[in-house]
Image 1 (cartoon, rainbow, N blue to C red):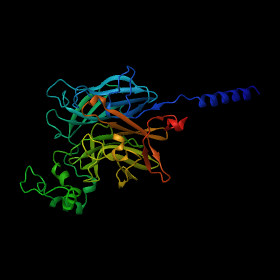
Image 2: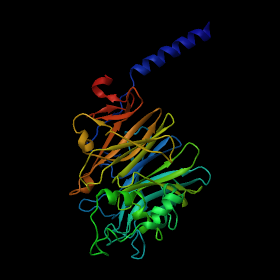
Image 3: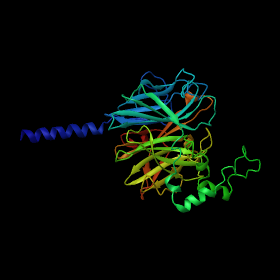
Image 4: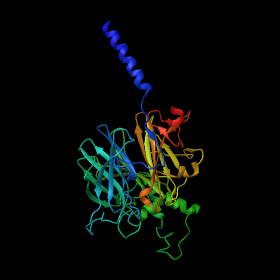
Length: 389
């Protein structure tokens, strides 16, 4: 009898506490103060959940330039709302010979944890100082702790001398061999033909720019990382002058590429990839290529990380859908059985004031993801605060 009474009292306490759960409000586009009252400075970033703590990594943006003057910042949180500034996880270098010298372009850092090695691995898009966006490199760093310090290892183009999976086979090889890499290059061919014609699209699809960059490695710009359920990790990045996305397998230690990769949506002009897995289907949200200006999001799905990938309609609904509510995708965070879409609202004239657009991913009756803008929403319910009351 005493045990029954105790269980009843426990049930009452639990019911009472559940009815008074403190809301955890996300306010897209607003200043997001850290523990010091300063706006979180982690742009183009991603999150890592490790031992019950979320770590948010992103570009430290200065007031007047988007070049990397500090490096990659790290913040920690147990509730995704209140963030503690953990300092600089990867610092730029003052060595003029370093690839990551102060003033380089260091973008979209992502960190994953390797269960086998116990190391934290960071990949990012790197452009060499003073070279504009011509380097198109991927950089990698490693640390023993989630907050760093991360040790920079190297940077470079990806998978030099390796054919992608989608261009293998006799028929693809014959089309590849027939390609003239100077045909559309105005810098090397005065009679260069125009881009965006049906013939040009076919040549891109057959591997024109992949062939051009074959020996030195493929271009790697806007990027994300993804660790699959089997522990395999993938580096997904914009390549071929941002015309084509590449999905490249990482080595078991996550520090290099295996040479296994595929091209996704050639000539589709996608960047800012963000990926998640739901009920056996891989979903990827990207953006178009319009510089700092927002555009309509794109969405793709596949039964395997290796495809085939199918394009869907813009996942955004309602007012502002045509510009992704002013943001650009950077990461999709699994949260229990739910997913959070993370994007940046860029402010190129005042980079440090860029804002964060976090929204709950919803699913229609057919299981297709979609987004709706919310001024404020509650992490406890994944609903707008008006609906959560």
